[in-house]
Image (tube, rainbow, N blue to C red; front, side, top):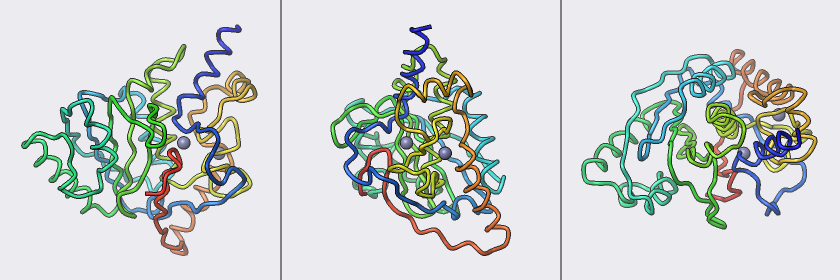
Length: 269
Ligand SMILES: [Zn+2]
Ligand SMILES: [Zn+2]
């Protein structure tokens, strides 16, 4: 039992969002639900796999179900592309995704062309989510391995990166269970939940049963025992997403302006 509790505790450390101390806004703050994404007529999902890293199919399927549920239910998954990148160049490649052709680190001539076409396609989309699966993803502040990383390339291109080996290191729970949590958690950052300051602490949800909860503590472990794995948003986050979705239907939503803050890295882009 003790071992199980310790392991469950570890689950919460795998979300890649646990920085201490938080450099800003350690108190309650608010953000806006990303209506550009929630209200998009179509969301194009593009997948980019580096050195063979891929999520388990069951985890990806659950993620897709959630994404459809909380947006306008029209998600198109495009064919994924694969790259081989030298290990030490991977992190730069991901972090500079948006910097134009000059900064495509470590790609071979053929892959570079493939990537330019890929990025062009994502930019032509009205609303895109680019999912990058990688064996390496470092925090720019202290170089520790992150589990996930969410940022934007423009107000229409959302980028979520996932560090396969780090996600798979979660003890007790299976790789699939771990991926189920991290896949949706990162896209939650791009959806803009938790929104209201009543349950938002530095971009993460204060509800322990929420997939957007960031920090491990004893109560969070107990919450897993009583409520099961946090595969979904809590009621407050759900209500905010529902409200945003309703505003799309009535046409009354305000166009979301991209705030280029990656809440997992607390880094201004
Ligand atoms: Zn996070
Ligand atoms: Zn929540």
